[in-house]
Amino acid sequence: MDVDIVETGPNNVVIVGQQPNEPPHAPHRLKSHIMAILGSLLLQAIISGNSLITKAAFSHSMRPSIYTLYRNIVASAVLWAWVLCKRSLPPRPSWETWMWIVLLAILEPALDQNLFYAGAKETPAGFSACIAGITPAATFFFAWLLQMEKVDCKKYNRFRIFGALLMIGGAMALFYHGKQLSISKSSKTHAAEFREANQNWIVGPAYLLGAVLCYIVFNLLMGKVLKSYPSPMGVTLYCTSIGAVLDTFMAMGVWHKEKGFWKITPNITLAAYLYGGIFSTAIAFWLLGKLIQMRGPIFVTSFSPLEMVIVMLIGVLVLGEAIYVGSIIGLAIIVTGFALFQWGEYQGAKATQQDEMNNLSTTEANQM
Image (cartoon, rainbow, N blue to C red):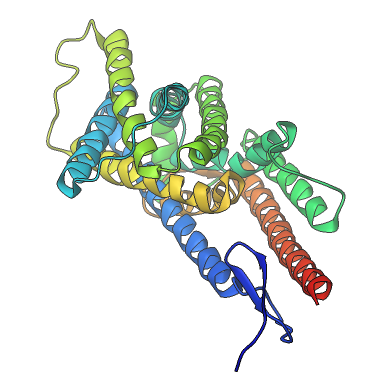
């Protein structure tokens, strides 16, 4: 039977006389949303594993700048081997894109990683993960200030704003130690050793906050770069390669007076280099780029608090790290803020889909 067809937009065809209950691309959107959630959970699992293995390696005298150097060397070697074996080199960036990629390499493989692991060495693994938990809130506010995210007074946006404020407040509560809670005998021993070896609770958190700032700007800029250069593999490959060069100069500047700083010993530090290079850099950076391309930087970073829950629990129960009342209070506040923020994101997505359905119905009525 012949039917009239009306085109209502790219890849969106509606048969006159039918009244679809949802946009034709809704099943694809649902699948894309589920894939984005699973990808974000996988990304946080990789980052959590890296936080724990690097903390163990630091206890074996692994140096932060040397770790970031070998991590990016391993990552760039793996990525180059992959693209050469597949014979699918990423497209050549324009000169403007090259400048943005160099800036991305300065922010993440160079500054962020060196600052973060320098701060992580001075603080427990759970603390560094909790500081990283303010990333979604800070990313949201930065995107708002830079007009990359539209925020009005709708109800779901109030949930997002309030949740973001709670996450930042929870991170500030972490600076209040309070009474130490002893989960096991090993936690007492670990706390005593930690107080003797790491007294600097000013420099460590300052490094971590600087790292979070670099990571936020990195995520926002990556979203901008991927719009003009839609190749997550290319961005990851070039960032890690440039980052390896920058980290070489940084490591030489810090450890040039110490002979043999570059030597690799076959222990937990070697495992940290390999895990950090293959999983936390090569795979995680590529996955991060794909997720930002799919849903944007705010959605991806909104899952960061999951890392702090995983790391803190494993740090206390497995590694015997000390936990304080301030950590429990801060954790509870951040998790509450995370829940409110995610609820606002969910309601916002529903509202956007409903608006698209209303616009589709209006277009159909006008065409008829």
